[in-house]
Length: 97
Image (tube, rainbow, N blue to C red; front, top):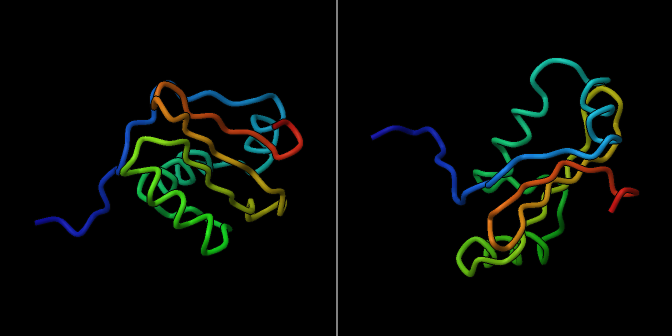
């Protein structure tokens, strides 16, 4: 059996807002792919205990899932939201919500 983490939920279509695309471009590399992997495997990033628990329940109950990450180079905050129906996952900046 593999020790690699497995996705906990479907992402649907993956999209990004203009601000998120620019922030990811500024970071360079594969940061977007790494963050998406963290999101889909249950590493919710910079959330408090209560919000982490809500996400854990959302995985089981089919509700919306939110992860928050600080980008390593620019220190900007980036959100990843997967909708409750799992049809779409969006990269966005908090101010674009």
